[in-house]
Image 1: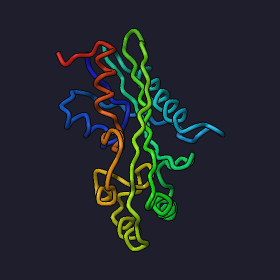
Image 2 (image 1 turned 45 degrees about the vertical axis):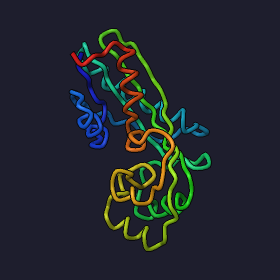
Image 3 (image 1 turned 90 degrees about the horizontal axis):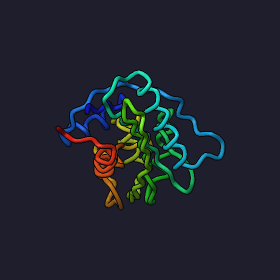
Image 4 (image 1 turned 135 degrees about the horizontal axis):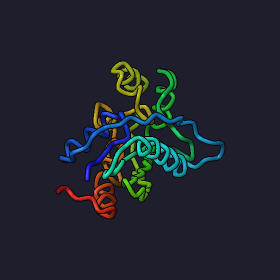
Amino acid sequence: MKLILASASERRAGILRDADFSFTVMSSAVDETPSPGESPHDLVQRLAAAKAELVAARAVGPAIVIAADTIVTLEGRIFGKPRSSDDARHMLEKLSGRTHAVVTGVALIRLPDAERLTFVESTLVHFAALSAEEISRYLATGEPHDKAGAYAIQGRAGRYVPRIEGCYFNVVGLPLARLQQSLSSLGWSED
């Protein structure tokens, strides 16, 4: 049974490639604006499901569609992708010296029977205190601009993360071990 990644994210594709999964990519753009009062958990679950549905409607089975959405949250506030350099600076200033959660919603749809499975994974990330100069240098790399929370743990920002509690791959954008378990429960095998 083939796997279809419903994402144009190079990070998610890289996680699957590095773990030796065989898959194809079909992009799925959805409006990522949170609904008023929507919790981080509900937001990522809704967005992942919407992405999976979009691709499942265009895909041909037998296959399993994999979709995900990742956000950073601190004290109930959602940090998505920054809209500008100033927005990225503000996010990094808020995260500096604090512990935040990275929350990823994953939605799987098995085709052709449309069996669905969703889950949410959360990882705590401890961020070092950053000086204004460190933030400026990091922003100048361009790395923060398309990342939830304005940082990439797998890149230069890894220097500022002394420890995490939970799945590292979740922080990158796709909780790998939990994904493997979920694929197996839907009957997927590497054969």
